[in-house]
Length: 154
Image (tube, rainbow, N blue to C red; front, side, top):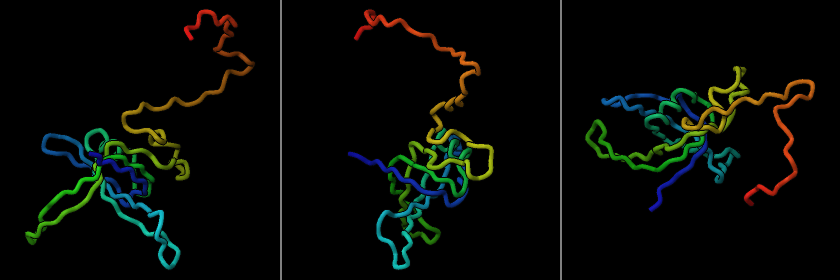
């Protein structure tokens, strides 16, 4: 069976990092996700507010690099969790359990010094090295190869 969901939206509040009794990180956050259809009478798109939870390194990544208003792309599974309210009534809530969380925008427009982490990367992907221009004067670290392709295996 298949249970996979990918959503993209903006965080409506700061992520909340907590730890379980055994020290496992768990971060809760909510995304505001615009619908692609069903504009209301005044021309505005309708918005769904979707609860998400990220565990372990993914949760620590979200808590460290994401803030209210940032665009996020969340990939994971949909989970229906039962709970009991203070009056003893049984309730259910739907949430996305995040396997991967990506940046959906860049932080360049906020007047800061760039990225908190490279855009499009998750916690498990190493940072992309910055581009540096070749040295002045035409010197290069590249060398010309012979045109002999006889030793290539294909």
